[in-house]
Length: 100
Image (tube, rainbow, N blue to C red; front, side):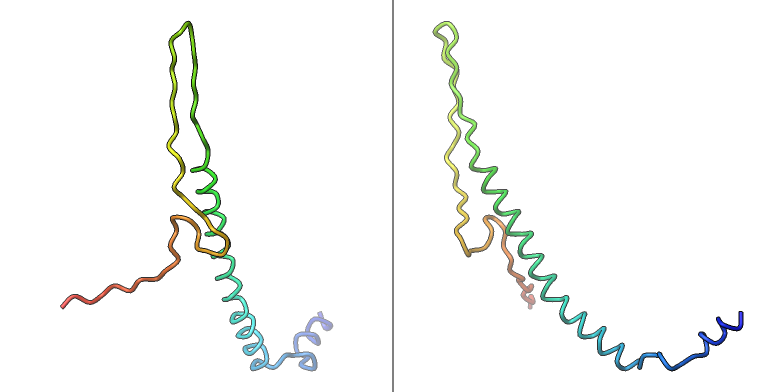
């Protein structure tokens, strides 16, 4: 019990509160760009998946006893060029215009 009291009252290893506030501020300011980059990469992956699913061709043709059943899938219209925004996903923040 005496040892715990000594450790509780010992201030030789205490940190300065201003230093802690400064470190937390620097850490938070460093995390913000990281989270924005993470968001952009998730959106890019969703756009890539949208292009991949749209590119699946489900066309078929079946001939049974002279009867032909066929379906021709429409060509894809989504394009996802390198370095551009994800297809069908806009990363813009449009402010509402005031009506007057």
